[in-house]
Each structure stands twice: as structure tokens, then as C-alpha cells.
Length: 541
Image (cartoon, rainbow, N blue to C red; front, side, top):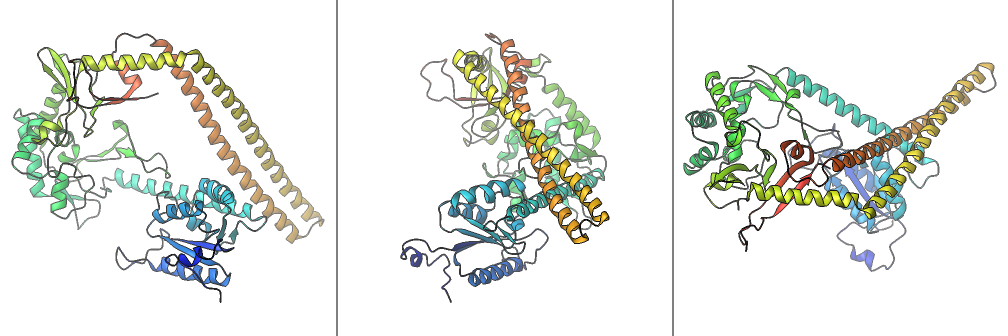
């Protein structure tokens, strides 16, 4: 029997000179529906079975095994699988020339990755892909269509699964059930009733204290400092100490911060209302949640016992609304909710000193220690810096060389748009022709021109082609939509830049329209009084 080589004795391979003809990287992944581990850190039986089966198959083919890559507890749509990513690095480095999996779905369930990796990068790198259970094999002529169909079916599976899960979770939210992994500070999950919260009395006492202090006139920064001076752990540290599940970093250990207080004072959960659906993933492929407008939140009243009574809540909300009007003008400030400390990420607050308005980081003062360097800047200096950069960007946009470049890009996009439109039209026409061919072959079967078996063979082949055409139409349509959005964005930018060319003063409307947020640092080594601290502007365009 030919010797099987597994990573760990790679010296045997390197000493042989050129890589043997067939060296295989085996990839295993646990399916979501197949969990059978005794404890969290065990390797599942499913993975063990996959390994045993694929090792036996590799040996039977005379292939030498370079390494076995296993991802346990990862979905087929997850692109951050550690073993998967290592396999891709080794594949690109040419350490093997075959990738063996139980099936194509174990490798990936995304049609996009099937096309990009199996039909793209693997071909470029000279790597053969083999799916043992579903007969996927890039070395077999005519096998590509079957793999594409498998990829399409897996893509539909993921979309349906995502839609079903979202529907169930939305239904639970509307019924007032708590579906989060972590209970809000002040509450615990009820062990007797799924989706119900009960009061955690120790933490609830701190919540009541915060509301009482604010109602008595103490500010949010002062409350944070008050709690820190008395050694009261913040919510993350409290949960860690008590062995409760929590999410978040402990960058400042057990210290309270300004925005922990601010968020607590605005949270309706403390008056017994279940508030959920504040964030949403735009797609099952995305791991980054995006905030949802408040009017779309799911709020169900009186689902659990309140920690704060309604009278105290109403008083605090009134006080918060009054203090939200900066500088006693009753108007929203120019930089309200737009500036963040470069070091800790917290929204900066407005302060006045000697007739000069400043923006400064609140967490430096809330902690009572020098954990955060504390970004700070005079507001008039910030406005000048933003105007300078904005006018520079606008002038560059209208620069003759830049304009020619933009014109070439627009012409290229227009050409690509026509190509995609032709491609969509061609595949739609081909799908219609294939559907017509199925109808014609049925007529031929009825007339006795072809046999039942021949008709079924034709029908299956044509339906496979139709599905591929439809998937191509879908992918091209998405690409076309992206081009249209880019073109609309370009036109929108030109209109905005024309409107604000040579602008000399900012107002709140302009700031809202053009700026997502600004990060501000601290300049402790300035030579001149007008020297600016570090500034990073995140534009919306």
C-alpha cells in the first residue's frame, strides 16, 4: 500500500523533491443539524465519521494526505471558518493539488463562493475539487453543471432557512418574548419560563440608584464618577463576577462610563416594556448588524416586572429632553451626535469655557482615572478644519484631470451596463427556448416519436439548463442594480458638490447630509494655540 502522509511528517515530502502527483487536503465541517458532542470542547462524532470516511477514500485512490482541516460548529455560509481559511492559504501556496470533502455543501453553501473558489481560484491554482458523497469532481467533463445546480440549491436552502428563522424570531418578539442571548443589566432570564425576564435584585438596586441620582439633579458624568468612587462594578464586570453571560469588552475594567448611564436612563425595558429589533442583519451573508429606525422597533408593553415606576421614569425623560437642547438655545447643536473620541469611541459632549465652546470626551472625567486620553477641540477650530477638507474634496472632484477620469469610469460603466443587459436578455431568451423545447418533446412523446425514457432524459437536462440560466439572470441583475446605484450616487455627489462649492459656513443640515461622524483626538504637544488635534472625518459620500 502506498504510504499516507499527514502534516507533521512533511519532511518526508520535501525530501522527495517535487511534490507527488496527487496530494490531498481533506476538509470537514459539522452540519448545523448534526450536533452530537458530549461537551463543548469535544470533536463531534459527525466530524470523526467524515474524517474516517474521507481518509479511507483518499487511501483507496492512492492519494497522499497533506493535512486534515476541520471546522466544528460552523455554518456553511460562514466565511470566517478558521480551518477553511487555513486550507485556502495552503491551497494558494501549492501544498496540495486536491481538495476532498464529503460534499460540496460541506465546503460551502454559497453559490458565489462555488463560482469564485471551485470554478475560479482552484482552476487557477491547479487544484482539483472532489465531493465524495455528491459526485462533485472538477476533473470530470460535464460535471460543472451539476456542481452549479448543487450550489444553487444550497443557496436557496440558506435563504429559506434565514427567512424561516427571521419569521420565527419576529413572531416571538411580537409576543413579547425575550430572545436575546444576554439579559439586560438588572434582569435575569427566568429559568421557569422561556423568553421571560425576572429582576436581579442586586443589580436592580444600582439601576434605581442611577435614576434617583439623575432625578435629584446629578448629571450623567457625575453619576458615573459617583459609582466608580464607590467601587460598584459596571454591567459587564458585574456579569463576569457573577458568572452570567455577557457581551462586550472590559477595556476599562469595572469602571462606569458616561454612555452606560445615558443608555440606562433611556431604556424602556426598566419600566416593564420589551424593546427588541433595534438592529438587523441586511442579509444572511452579513455578520454586521445595522441600526433600525426607532419607529420600526418591536415594543411590547408590560411583559415583565418594572424596576422603575412610571412617575420616576416620566420625570427623568422630561429632564433628559430639556438637557438635550445644547447651550440653552433650544436647537440641536451643529455637532450633536456627530463627534466621537478617537481613543474610546464615545460621543463627545459640548462645554463652554471663557466664552469658547469645546467638544470633549466624557469618559475621561467619568472614570476618575487617566484611562482615556480624552479627545478635545474648540468647536470653531473643528468647523474650520471640516470646511477646509470639504472644499478641497469638492475642488478635486471638479478638477479637469479628475473629471476626465470620472468620465472614463462612467463610459466603462455604461459599456458594462449594456453587456449585463444583453446577458440578461440572452439568458432569459435561452430559458424560454428550453421551456419551449420541453413542451415540444412532450408532444413528440405523445406522438410516439420519442420514448418515455428519452422524454424524461431531455426534460431533466433542459430543466438543469433552465435553472442555470435563471441563476445567471439573477447574478447579472444584481450586478446591474449595483451599477445603477453607483451611477445614481455619482449624479447625487455632483449635485451636492455643485450646491456647496466654495461654501464658507456650515449648518446642521449640511453636517447631517455630508458627515457620518468625526473622530477627534487630543494634541498635548501643540506649539501654537491654533494647532489642531488629530481629526478623522468619515464622510457619507
